[in-house]
Amino acid sequence: MLRQPMPKSSNHRVTVEPTIDVLSSGLRVVVTEIPHSQAAVLAAYVGVGSRDEARETLGLSHYLEHMLFKGTESRPEPTAISAAIEGAGGSLNAFTTRELTSYWNRVPFDRLPLAMDVLADSVRYSLLAEAEIERERTVICSEIRRAHDQPGQRVMQLLSDAAYGEQALGWEIAGDLESVGAVRRGHLADHIQTWYRPSNIVLSVAGNVDRAEVVELAERHWGSGWPEDSSEATPTRRPAAREMSEDLTQIEVRDLEQCNLALALRSIHRLDPDRYAMTLLNEVLGGGMTSRLFTEIREKRGLAYSVGSYPTAFDDAGHLSIMAGVTDEHVLETVDVVMDELGKLVAQPVSDEEIERVREHVIGSFRLGLDAAASWCHRAGGMLVSNGFIEPVEETIAGYESVTVADIQRVAQRIVREDNLAAAVVGPFEQADDLRERVGGFSPN
Image (cartoon, rainbow, N blue to C red):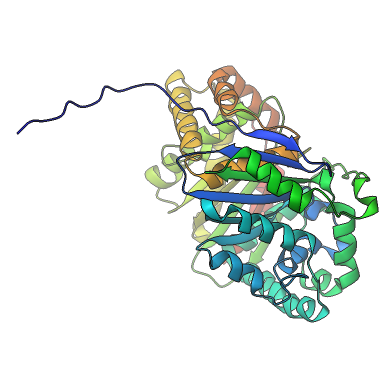
């Protein structure tokens, strides 16, 4: 039997580079061509989230996210939008964060025109029918109740409140039953008029698509027909307050099998120069199964099945969250271990071996996270609407590669400090005073 020789390995890589075009309306279109993909992924990113809302109607962005799937002028039936995409073999959804709202669909690449039509139709021409608003109010209230009933979600709600206090970043994205109950059609219409303007929307398209075709379709569906005042600037976002809550420890006693414990330190904003070092610091602390918290809390002490940490960053604020599921008798010990590990990051530089290990993991995970058209679509759209630019992949990797041991220690010293620790517990925990004493008296020195 003759065997064909194996091809020689090559380091040649096809570079994927998003392009940005601006339509006649001012709306930005970012296209990421991935010729080998079988998909076309489209997402409309709007620069508004829950932190831009009034407390009385909190949850408005999320409410509108639901409503834009509930019928348009050309597709008046509530199920027509989803039927159009799913009928092509695709999928669609949306999400709301504290700073943006996104609507997306994913279709086979040859159904790009349909996907563009449906996305523009749902975002721009929703009927906001009174009957659908009332019907969806019940659905959203059920979603809020479900989040409250799930301990893992509830503890993070309490942690946000403890870390940010009475300001928009500490409020719930979906609102509460009272604020959702106060939303009326006029609020939703005003929200669209105020925020859904071409200059505040980014259309991101990625996959087996042609840039020229995407821009032509986008101009047809998004380039004209906007209200007269659509060229006006959107309101200025209120800055985040630096103060944490007056109650840094929030506890909700429930009859559960274990306690859901969460801790947070206020940290850095999204474009802080130390953001790369912050990512590596988190990886050292609790970013995986070889992290310090996982090793100490699970492997050495057997206190928890799951434990970890992750950073969250906003325009002008951020926080580092630490979570663990532990029995009630192990809550305080787990908190002590976390505090001890935070103190070590401040006092002692990480080793060269440790920084190289976490660096490789961060870079590798980052690259693998861009293995699908959807990843490129959401990365480009989210970055452009939030930051005003798209950071090239190799620039991000270079940022990680530039982090030194001293950088990680400096960032630790920035965020691990007195009066900068908040805690929340949901579960059968009765030692509230002891936990408050630890959190209130926390000092890394």
